Each structure stands twice: as structure tokens, then as C-alpha cells.
Amino acid sequence: MSAHSRIRFMVVDDEQSIRKLCSTIGETLGYECTEAENAEAGLARLEEVSPDIVLVDLNMASMSGIEFLGRVKERMPQIEVAIMTGFGSIETAVKAIKLGAYDYITKPFRVDELKVVLQRMAEKVSLVAENQFLRERVSSEMALHGIVGASPRIQDVLRMINRLKETRTPVLITGESGTGKELVARAIHFGGPFAKRPFVAVDCGALVPTLIESELFGYEKGAFTGAMKTKAGLFQAADGGTIFLDEIGELPLEMQAKLLRVLQEKEIRRVGSNDKMKVDVRVIAATNRDLEAAYHAGTFRKDLYFRLNVVTLHLPALRERRADISPLVYWFLDRYAAGNKMQVTPAAMNCMLEYDWPGNIRELENCIERAVALGGGTLMDLDDLPPAVRAAQTSMAAIAAPDSPGTETDLEELERVTIQRVFDQVGGDKTLAGKMLGISRATLYRKLKRYNIRGGNGESRALGAAAGGEAH
Picture 1: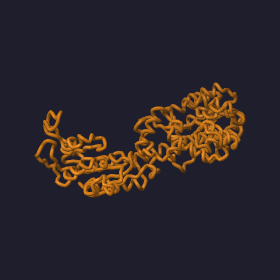
Picture 2: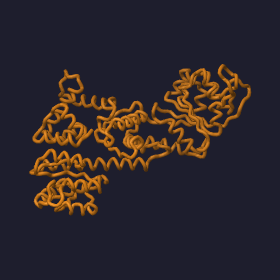
Picture 3: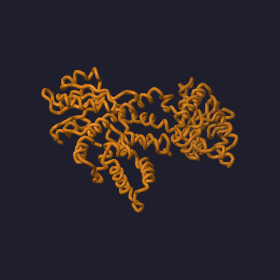
Picture 4: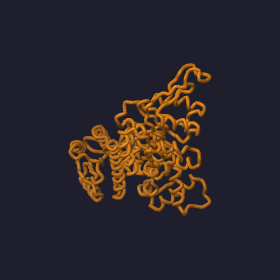
């Protein structure tokens, strides 16, 4: 459903007056309305009308609303269905919700009460549609080797990768930890004509200082204690292809001098050998340090810096490309919850959009993997996010609540006071309260029950229904 599509609403009831009332209410909300005089007629019009939301009476002559609900969910499970009942039976309503109904409403109902139910159903339909749109956008905009993003900053990176993949020019990739420097290096190598040649990744920061030379250039048998046989180094393994030197700034100065000589002479010498061996290797280096400042400070060789810095490609931090957070969320959801089509609530997405992500894409990936592992499997909500991510939003909420008691330092008490105040301000309207608080309907129900916050008429009934239908 596009952003400009109208919600399609069908009401199924054998009482014409009820149908007309519901249709009129739907029209005032801007919905396209269809009526069906019984369950059979409603089922017959499903394919033709393709409604987004359906309101059906529980007690009809030939087919009950419960049976109709089951038929609809079998044929078109994406349709949201609410049940109308004249009996006020919580047991029946809970059964309907467990079978897939979105909610229930008791006859006779108030116009405002029905409006709230229909608006909530429409919001969920819109949420699912938005999630699907973002998933499709990720698939269509996914660039080289999993580099996801449509922001101007990341598009500049992709254009640079496209230019570099055909060359053998040395490249220096800069950026904070977790921004995807190795992913870019692989895209440069595997996106061009050298894709079938070796790609060797080396984490310079993880190499043992006393073994760096033998790891990079290899060693001869007997060169040192434990060298039982001759071994080729990583540069030789990358011959003809690309060697990726990650965290190049961590190399000791002595090793920097030897690396410079290899880059200049295009030859290596194994530890314990006097013979030189030619190597044809493209070097892509990466660092999260300021190498220009490092060579001015004397901790990095100036000549090596300029040898590596033929082309510099800077990767922006995730907080500098917030427009890419949503596509990345769905990219990782489809990786860690393949086939589940998990949805993300607006509250959870807003929280992730506002967080600064000091660990960048790596931290976001860990966040999504955690949510999939610990969540309900179908919906990612605010409570599924790591405490550090939620804490940032809690801090902002506390700043935005000047009327809260200054002596209360306990976050739970602050949360309770904030929810109670908002709930009082909106007169018990849970939809408005949820929007003002930036949390989903399910989360609001949990908070209301946890803090024993009661609103207007029907609060106990609503909480009872929520307990039966909201499982996370």
C-alpha cells in the first residue's frame, strides 16, 4: 500500500443500521467503505475489494464471526479483523484475539470508541506496509557486496568504489571502528576484474609484535625456534591480488620501514633468508586513527603515509548518515530472522534513529541480532532494544519532563510519573498517550498494567483483552 492509498474498510453485519453507522464512521476517517450483509457475502467480496481492515459481527445466522475470522486469515492473513459482540463476553473476545483478531468492541458502542479501534487497525496496516516498502527498498538499492544505503555520503563512497575497482591504485580507507572498512575493501577487489584473484585480510592490530614480519613475509625452516618448515607469508599468499591491511596505524615503526620497502621494491624477503622474491600485490590499507596527525607526532612514518595515501576513501559514521539506519535495520532483520518478516514498531525505529551509535554499523548489527534472539519473533518493539539504546531516549524524555518531581532519581518512578501525567492529560485515550510517549500499543498496555495506572471507562476490559492478545 503506497503512502497515498486510502484504507479499504469492510463491515460485515446482518443489521443494516449497524452497517450504515460503521460505514459512515469509516468515511469520516477517509476510508473506502464496503458493506456485506452476512459472512458469505463478505467472503465472496474479499478478492474483489481486498480490504485492509474488516469489522465483523460475532453472532450471525449462517456463519459466526469467529468462523469468518478463520476463513479470512486462511485466505488473506494480512487483513486486520475486529469482532463486534453484543454479549460483552471477555472469554469470547480473548478467543477471537488468539485466533488472529486485532481487537473487539462491545455493542452498543460509542462513535469515538469505534473510531479508536478503526484508527489503530489502520495504523497497524500502515506500519506493515511501511516495513514492506523499506524491505523492498533495501533489496533494490543494495549496492556492492552488501553495502546498504541511499544517503548522499554513502552514495559518494559507492561511486568511488566503482571507479577504483578497475585500477591497481593503493587505497587508504579511513573511518571510525565499525563503519565497514573491510566491506569496502572487499567491494573494491571483488567488484572488478581481479575478483578471481586472492584477497587476503590482515588485522595489524591483532598481530603479535615479535611475529609480524614472519606473518607478513614468511620464514625459512630453522629461522627461529619452532620454525620446523618453510612457510609463505601473507604477501606471497596475496600475490596477483589484494592484501587488505586493517588498522595499519597499529604497526610498530620498525615494521613500517620494512613494509615501505616492500611497497617500493615490490619484493619480499622471508625471515631467515637472503633471497628476495617478487610480489605483485595491490595494497588497500585502513585505519580509525588520524595518520596525518600520527606522522606529525612521529608515531607513523611520513613516507609510508604518502605511499599508502594515493587515494583516500573516508567512511562516514552511522550518526552522519541516519537516513540509512532504517534500510540497515531491515537488512540485518532479513539476515538474522530470515523468513519471519519481522516488523518494527515506530517507537523502536524512532529510538534507533535518535541514538548516536558510537559502535556504528557493527553496533547496530549486534542490536538487531540481540532483538531477534530475545524478542517474540514477529515484532521488534522498544523493549527489545539494548539498555544503552533505550537509555538515550529515556534521558531525553527526562529532560523533556520539567514537571516531574526533582527528588525522584529512580528511572522506574520517573517513567511511572511521566506515563500517569500523559495519560491524565489525554483523558485516558491510549492511542494519544502512546503517540505522545513514543511507544507502541502493546508496550503501553504493559506499562499501564505494571504501574497499575487506570484510565476512563472500559480500562479493565481493554487491559484484559490486551493480556489475551498481546504476547510480547
